[in-house]
Length: 240
Picture 1 (cartoon, rainbow, N blue to C red):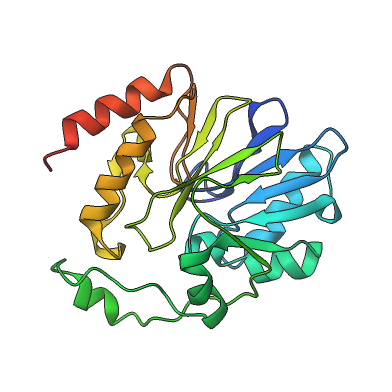
Picture 2: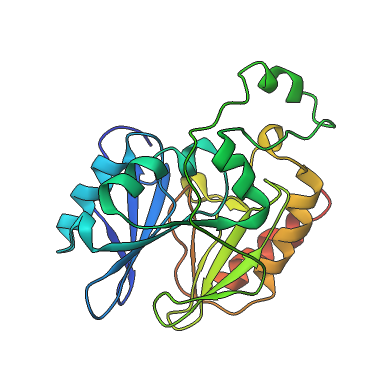
């Protein structure tokens, strides 16, 4: 799943999945407005801005067309490239209010003390690539992206973890509430969650809203009645 990133994948009119590592190991997303401006969701690892610039050129856009950078949460594989993108594009960075302090301070959100490997993971350090935060959002906000992008606060992976629902296209961006590695849905890694049980509990929200396509930060999208597939996963895994 690593190696040279693949080309952008069209999910809907004006909405693309952009692999920044491998074919779909780490994904960002681009919303292209009718006027040509672009909103990026998630900034990948530190080296991702170069890949994102290449991907934008493949869909006929440039870094200077980016007017917003939205982040699902403050983990290194989602915010690593945020500062570089902000500098290159001049676009403001947005993140949930509960994760904003971690991103500004360059400090990873806390790990779940109930997880056996949390102490081992803590030995890796708590540094996070820092980035100024220009704006924050909260549960229920409708961000002016693609006719309206709904914020679904799904904490647990981090305190401010969010998913995004684009009602007009029927696309849900899950963030790290659920992974889809190798076309198999799974919970995010418990060791790196702030509260693993809460992450599983709030993922239930993803079975309650309406969408046809589920887009994952880690793994390929599911098209066509994706909500049914997500609900089946949630039912099967609710006691695990």
